[in-house]
Length: 638
Ligand SMILES: Nc1nc2c(ncn2[C@@H]2O[C@H](COP(=O)(O)OP(=O)(O)OP(=O)(O)O)[C@@H](O)[C@H]2O)c(=O)[nH]1
Image (cartoon, rainbow, N blue to C red; front, side, top):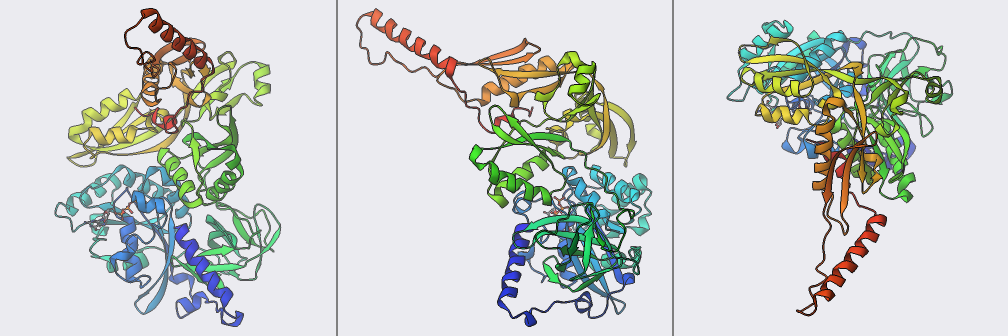
């Protein structure tokens, strides 16, 4: 959304600067709805669903029906405005749009939040629902209930949200609404009579759905008369105005010019910018409790997701809405391609991290790659999207190291405990794993994986899960054709390529979602990779002992395939505690130094070959083997 929004916002700002101040009219929410908005006529809701079940397409139809955009294909997927979203055809950022809709002669303000479907961006859904009272839960009428449908349903239930179950894509010839209604009933006990049917593509049933939003979802439960208090659900950086925030107003009201402060720091600030997002900014003077609005306090105004903006009179220790801390699933090192680019990359990472609060950034350094950062992500797709956004939105190119899941170790010995400042430590970079002699116990992160698959693939899916060290939990039937399997799986076995393998063994019919299951004791070791005897820190991994030999062989073979042949012979070794578990040799290019000889004495030929061998020996000891950039990630894929 943001590059596009930047340009719209900047255009607006340029226009404002060009006009006399008396003409830079601000709107109030009252103008937007032609009358003063009341809490009873506000509805905050989200669209949640499994990947590709049609959330963004439905958002387009809702924007059209409420007159926010004109019907037409040029507006396709209006809320997916990031370049990466358009290129990949997925939503990665939850986006808000305030819509006006008249129902029974009353004007309503509907705040819609379009959310991503992919499990890696589930945190976007979690933070969005803190501002909502209800959700439209879309289910593809052809595919039926999928793994993420189960996840979003339980999230909505946990947050006490009203669920409007809605079947989408009923226009498809293979759509079977009755079958899917029966699935919803068997899995979630949803009354089939409460299920709506729409086609987001054709625009069928959209009006009924909007009316259900108004009639079924309750108004925000807020304190209109109290002091101003708002909960921050998103932030982004604007070149001219500093940090801008998306805020859900929990009590009171806010006006441009009002004195406020952040919960996290008591310094006074003044509200400078206030706007409705439609999804482009529409400046307003005032907003009331229950609204979701954009707020900015100027370049030094600050703000972060989960923080609260408070009236300056309000005591700092008021209750806060808690956003559960993000649990990072994979960590990877990010380094500038050239150390001179470190400050620019640092600035870009900071700005992008502001808009993607799910990442955790800490400084890191590597002997080979110099100064950089260790960044925690929610999954591999999140990692890829983050680096793609760095490149596309900030023109910042970075080198990535092999991703690793976080491990926990319990230390023994007073010296080690003192050195690591605690008995238990989380290891996010395999290189920093303490010496095996100082470790009492290793712990590995586990997840509960939910797989919904057609019954004919149960055997293949079970083998895959067992192969990935999974432990089965009770299964349940979704209907006579589909089954829901659950497994406790080590995160390290899931995070890299589990989903792709599952899709390929089930011809794309199975779906997968996982939830954190905490750390559990495990038998682990650190495996290092030596290239011509030199340790390559960035390729060290922590592996389960049962996988050691297999991983050692696979990693060295894969590296042999991926490292281009060099002028010298390259030895690739996988080593654990000084013991070599696998070795591959990459043969050197061999120039035919004897090509120029036509016949003649054989000793001449031997002399040339000997000289070549000696030259190569010298090169081998000084050779700096170049490892291609993608090696670090690709090498981990099976
Ligand atoms: N036939 C048909 N296709 C639809 C309908 N709604 C959406 N689609 C198609 O389904 C695909 C996915 O739609 P999206 O709106 O991108 O789905 P999404 O849930 O937003 O996807 P993510 O954000 O990646 O989770 C697109 O090709 C749409 O054109 C519908 O009602 N009927």
